[in-house]
Amino acid sequence: MKKQIVGALLTALAMGSSPAWSRQMPLYDLRPKISVGGDAVVNVTPDRIVIGLGIETSDPEISAAKQKNDEIVKKTIAAIKGFDIPDGDVQTEHSSLQPCWNPDYPRVPTKTYIARSSLVVTVNDPAKAEELVASTLQAGVNFIHGIDYQTTELKKYREQARDLALKAAKEKADKMAAALGQTVGDPIQIGEGYSGSPGCYSSNWWGWDRGSSRRVLSQISVQEPAGRSDVPDTIALGQIAIRASVYVTFLLKK
Image (cartoon, rainbow, N blue to C red; front, side, top):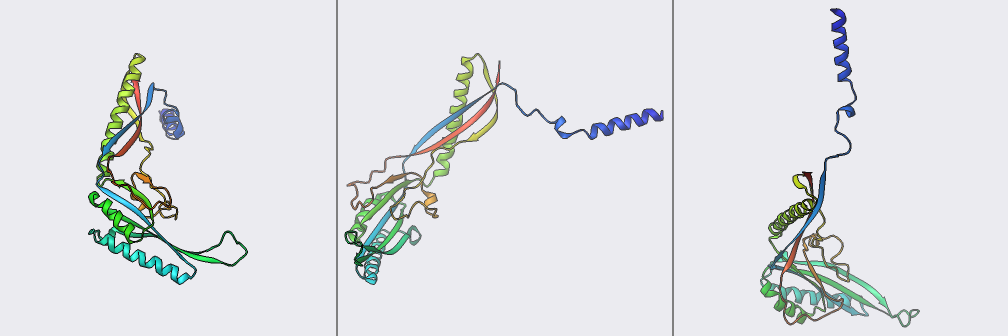
């Protein structure tokens, strides 16, 4: 009897001390499965526009170059305020003052000073955008760095696009499996892929491509050529595309 009890105890200890990996699932999932991707786009009329404005002045005197720039900035902000734009929706994005030598006579110490400022304006009433841009140009703005069309309901439309992308993935899996005489079972892995989601436009004064809090809000952009000082006769809102991309792995069954 004692031998039987000791033998049972040793067996129990051996089972309890067996390596954990011996009781885990296999490293490879050998179940038949199918992996597919799904993409979808939801087109939305924008209800917010973010505009990048640039001001550049120059003068042989450093103080004069800055003073000229400051005066135009003040006039520009006053013009923007005339459209009932809140203070929080007008931001100075970039400001610089630097010397520039005459490139034709590099050895002659003839230089001028260039002052640059860029402003970012968020317009929550798209109907105001065209007239606002025209007013800022009259105030002295000489660069339009970009016009960014956005929606304030981005989360809602992204979720709609994601749902459509998942449905597209399921339809694709069903058709592919059916062509092989099989059917699709439960999903065992679901993930969201890169959907080309909204990046931001950049200005030639390094104002919109280096991580400001404004930039991360950018959703879809229209780049204007550097140095362009005119705007279209009409700012057409059109629609912006909210995209979603997913990947799903389904089990296969006969």
